[in-house]
Length: 290
Image: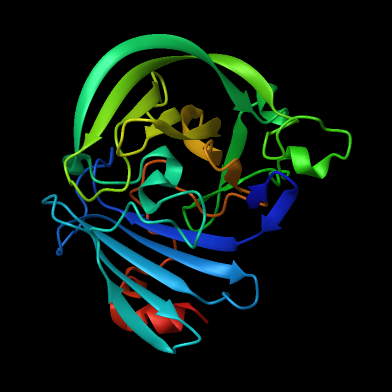
């Protein structure tokens, strides 16, 4: 959701599919191409962008991502540079590396631990009462037992007097975090220094303060953490929504999950029957858009 000072400007809908190879508790899996992971992002709405499909292949050796995009209007697959991950994502306030708080390659930054802190983080109201309970499917994959309700933002409430992009029905809870400073090694990276607030338990960002190249504050990225119970094992490592606020422009882009968590596997060792590894090729991008 693209949200300005007067309310909602634009909306994008998407589906995301992953195949992970690296860091699997179940041990090594076949990885002939030496990837960390493969990712497909498919836009489903609005109509003029539906079918646009982005493929990202991340090598294990730290080299730039291999990526490509299929645009239905052009009816062809175009390979794109894996270096330009600080460019805006479809015109939003988020850049590609902002995905899930930090979606880039660790090798592209210089990292420094600068402190620890207790902060307040937003949570879904229903989530303060219970984790997201997952059930195992016959295929071996997992699925949530509930339909995740949409998050309410300020622009949805006519009586709301705060920022239009604020999660006005969230519950704020204390979390212990590490403060980690990231400095881009690429001089052409569009961000300057970034200060991450990494949750000590989840190991993922709860906040990120972003500076421009001149060192002035530019954006605030706010993430939500969600815990899930899998087979009597509870994990806290998913990001259910995140909002990137351009504090200079007074504009924000908010992303949140809705509906069901489909076919997720906490151990990342079983193939989802709906996500075939052969889909993750440049040759299959046009097929996937359908």
